[in-house]
Each structure stands twice: as C-alpha cells, then as structure tokens.
Image 1 (cartoon, rainbow, N blue to C red):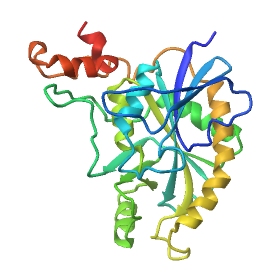
Image 2 (image 1 turned 180 degrees about the vertical axis):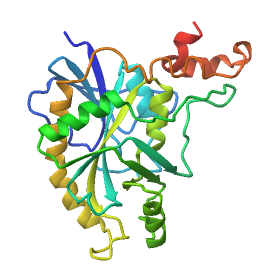
Image 3 (image 1 turned 90 degrees about the horizontal axis):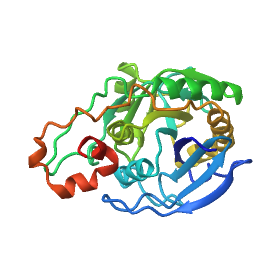
Image 4 (image 1 turned 120 degrees about the horizontal axis):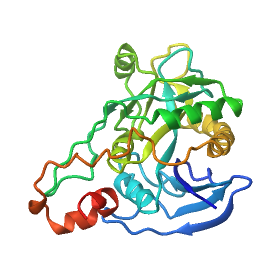
Length: 287
C-alpha cells in the first residue's frame, strides 16, 4: 500500500522511469491558476510520485513565468509531504565541475518579479526559513546521488536570480565573493512556498556549466547548457529511483506545523475566500 507521497519538480522527461506503475495524468485547478502542466503521477515501490515539468511541456515558461504557487498548491492538495527539486545550475566554484551534483542546504534570493507567498490579500503570515532545506530529504538525496554514481557535493548555497538572461561577469564574481556554490533561476520562491505548505523540500542541483566568472571556459550558452542537461537527465532519473526507496514515513519535523503559528491576522478579520483558497495550506488550523 502506498503511504508516502512526494512531488518531483524538474524537467519534462523525469517521469520516464523504469518500474513506475499505475501512471496517470492529473489535472488540478488551483486558486492560483493552472500548474505548469498536468501532473504525471505514478507509484514506485511504496512511494507515490507526482511529477511536474517546471517550465511546462516543451519548455514554454520562463523562470519568471513558472506558476510556483499553483505547482506547490497542487502538490499539497494531492497529499505530498516531500518535494524533490531537480534543477540545472551554473557552478560558482572550480571544484564543482559541469556534470557534478550538489545537494543544496542554503539559498540567496535575488528574484524580483515573482509572487513569493501564499499569504496576503487579507491574511498575513510569516514562516521560519532560516534552514530552507529539509535535512532529512537532503540526506536521502545525497546518499542516492552517490549510489547512482554521481560526483556529489553535499551542502552548498544556491543563488536564485531572476533571469532569463545569464549573469554579468561582475555579478558572477559578486556571488562568488559571497561564498555561493551555484546559481540558478528556479528554486525560489518554490522552496519558500513549500515551507508555507509544510512540504519538506530539497534540491538535486545538476551543474551544467561554469558561470561566466571562469576565464578558462567559454561564456555560458544555451547550446552548452542543453548538451550537459541531456547527459544529466539519466543521472537524475537514477537518483530519483534510489531516493524513492529511502523516503521516510511521516513528515519532516522541520516543516511540521510551520504555518500553525505563522498567521498574524485576527481570525475574524480573515476574508472567507482567502481561507477557502488556502484550505490545503492552513485549513486544518482554522477548522
């Protein structure tokens, strides 16, 4: 019997996994619009996996256009308590070679134009985010990546930029001076929304290139990124298979109750339509 449910947000080909059973496509309507695409759901062992292609099928959504709230709301409404993010990133460190995997433990948010919370419009909430990554899930992913044969760096800071243009050389050097490990365009506000939804979140960051700081390598280009991404897809699938076998029962204590005491607004002042919209997120606290 399937008792564990995990979302997988990444490329559109990730669900093509040997052994995935009871595969179905699920269309979810959310108060925040449609998710990036219909969700492909399937069972692997005792885990129900819910796959969302972050940029839509055929890669039609820029990082700024990804409906992050709809994606996380959909996963929560389908019972997900874990979320694996599979993300292509640029390396900011010499030792993180293109093709390597980084299991992230921190984020720096440099996004500008994205709704980053489920709260607002009559309901104010603040969740703790000092430790943005589930250590339980990160440990599972690190072990899975090593078992899959990936050169794996455990721990690292992910700078999330707005995009869609890549960094300037000055920006890239700035992020390196901060001690950041990789740079990408998608994990925020995704991770913040997952925390509000009390979903344990962790990232498999797949290094595709050295960002433009590296004078010994060509500047990052789409063609170079895509070549490495294609090589990384098979590795990502193997990591997901290994990780699925070791996802624990229950809920990560780090996220359990994350939104229980987050709301500052007096309950009688919260508009009913907002409570209805956030029912999967905080409904149990206002029953």
